[in-house]
Length: 136
Image (cartoon, rainbow, N blue to C red):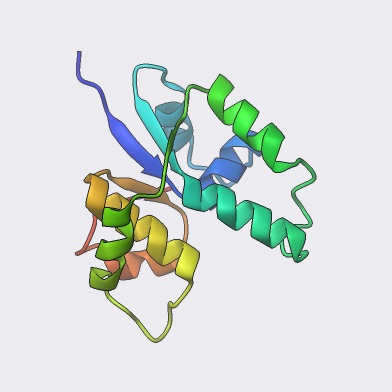
């Protein structure tokens, strides 16, 4: 049995939990398959908490505890932030059109942990030569 290990970005975590129609059905199937190992960086939890606090995620009516609880029920695994991920952040290419620190940290996690990253964010295409990117 071949186990697929994948990292999902914050948007994919939210879309999957909300059953969002924009989530690619193939990606949804990958995330639903309990034989796959799906990882969520703690960076995503920071991002959700911070953005909810400052009013940038108003469409998300659930709190961070619910998000974590549902992710655990879905058998998603949380990746703690490590010193190595932070050190490797400096190696993430910096583009004038994409400077989002949360995104760039998640890209660093993908690179450091050698996990393909699932994202629907068009700006992540900039990093397709730096990390393994799966478009959602």
